[in-house]
Length: 310
Image (cartoon, rainbow, N blue to C red; front, side, top):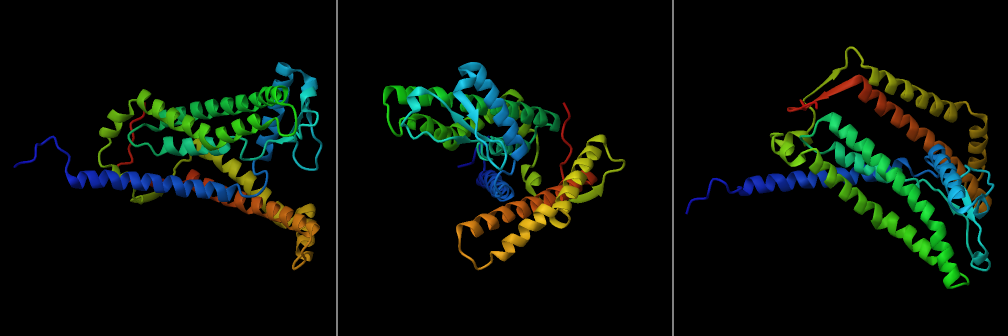
């Protein structure tokens, strides 16, 4: 019995499964690398403070300035406290915009998914990344704004300690499941809108896209985008070197952490953590600076690197 010409051979099926496995593996590696890069506390302190500022002022406009306030700390201004008569005796804690709550993880993850999609032009990928970054940023702000009415409703209906539990459950659901659903749905819609299925079909041998580059060359002349990237990488590199070798406060923190070696105490644990955060950020920024500079200067060529520009 002959196999119909339209049937897909087993070798083609295994080839597609291999590509899917490579994509999933790359996503996992990228996610682990991201988590390592952002391991120090407040890795996105500037963005966290900006998001907290927007949250504070938007909340004040909607629910009134008396319902929210900043909590003073020695670190970044990223902690807010809700106020309402129903919160008396509820054990309500201040809320902090940590690096995980900033939404950067979700934006990076979906950006990587879009960038790895074969057959779609670079221009369409960049547009998709910008749109998804904007959508996820807005949804994250809405998520933060919804926390207050959820807490108020919970404490009005069931006063007492822990009555704000619905707020926390919603917060955890969005971080663990909600944003993942948005990412998958958003990528799927983008892929269909840009005609992804047809473009992927016309992309040729997809296995070439997940192999090592066949040639690496220097960009001559450097485009404006590369110059901007080099400037930012230089600033990041100079900041890192200054922190590790010339910053007096960082040096003092290092000496205090070294003096706490083999000493078990809450004070020493905090001093060691602070130095680990300072040095960890500096070394990671230096690594990012080097990688960004390399991609700005070098051009990587694959067997089918020509993508249609639309």
